[in-house]
Amino acid sequence: MTKTSVLFVCLGNICRSPVAEGVFRAKLAEYGLEHDFEVDSAGTAAWHSGNPPDSRMIKTAANRGIDISRLRARQVTMDDFHQFDFILAMDYENLNNLQEIDPGIGKALLGLYLEYAQDYQDKEVPDPYYGGDEGFHTVINMVEDAAEGLIKSLQNQPVK
Image 1: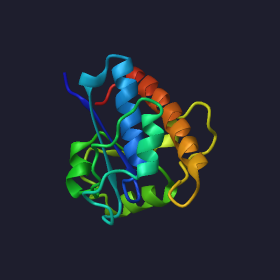
Image 2: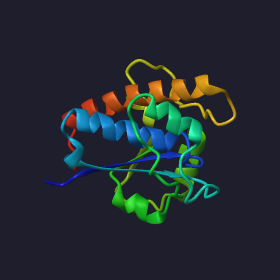
Image 3: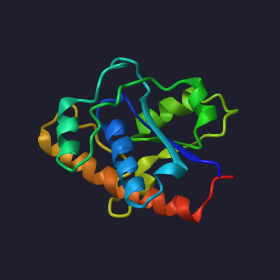
Image 4: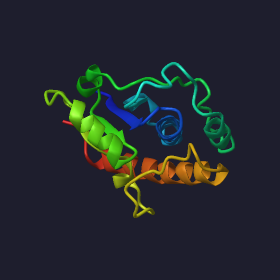
């Protein structure tokens, strides 16, 4: 069976996209689907490449039982457009950045992650980097909701 592959993308790959990866992995494990998916995260910028996620996001995720401390930031590459079925941006700015570098010959479907959210009308996951702790809690709530929606969507819609 072919694995469905999902790449989560934000700007620096230290807050939103690594927690989206961690939450999605946890939800897949909860449903016994972890072996059916390939999951990763990246940033459109390389500022933090090689660094762990923001310590505040690591703490927020850990408080929910999700360990993202081993993840390391990386920048999106051209290979990602060929490797992943879905590349899901956290906001319009990063979606636009992805569309600008998309070679147009890969298999990846680009979109916004919150399109899969069930309880949030917003389409953008706000960047909590410059805010307080509440922003990190808001982000994790949003990506948990979107993770549930994405799993439900993919169970009804196999990748071609």
